[in-house]
Image (tube, rainbow, N blue to C red; front, side, top):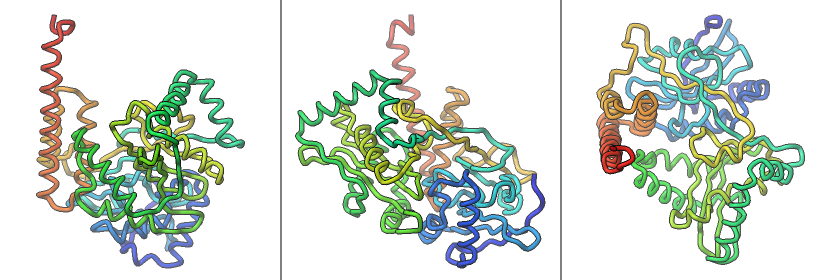
Length: 390
């Protein structure tokens, strides 16, 4: 752990011009903080919307050495705007800010939960986020290299584009869209996806929807803001993607597509076209967040290591004792550590979205019911499959 620091907790609207200037200087000096989530504009917008938001200002010998935007949910401290915040950590110059454990100790909360911590940490486990780092020539040489490396995959997508156009009509793609009605359509499609897949609806709570709308109307320094790209085929909207961007980095955030057209891969086609159009405007890093979706391996050629951890106040149990978390753990008990980790991540999203204990518990019950039901379905499938049961 680094040298001791003093901490002051302030509201996000109490950030002064001097704070913001120091913040920007720290980002400029620290390449690990290149993501748009680290920009002061993100904190200012999110802090005006997310309940119980604050900023920890760290000082050493009277000098500001770091900022940590966060929110409180019950007895848990989380990064500001979780579960929407795909990167988080202390805003500081390299080696000057407090580490994860110092932050937890300084804020004196029962728990500090992080899912993508950038910076020094001893607790938790490493995870990798995936991205595309464009060559100097931009999209064309990147696509050429990918097509040579993954020829079958990209030829299949080229066929999918032709099929989509043959089925519905001419394809049109637009980027830099900020139409609130289009965003509402994206959110509706995303909520439908959550219902189909049994995931917690992060937009049910309301403030997360408000955050996306507010960021869409924000214009900050160095092209900070949010925008959408959309694809139409024959006049029909087939895919939309909401992204956050700043500097030369473009973060794909919420992609959706019409599920009835999955065979034509409209979401992937839109991502390719978005990268082509954005690279023409100077973007060189396209961030895809965590892995999991199979298509990302065909795109990405770079990564960033982040930390997932829960730091407990000294003297508390080594594992989280909430009844809701215990319920989720029991739902995943028969599937081992991997499923339990998935259940805990689901709980982290529920805990972050829902601002009352009752709603958090109801969300956890719903997630556990989905897990139990899927477990029964898998067990039934195994018993009915002669190749397995025999």
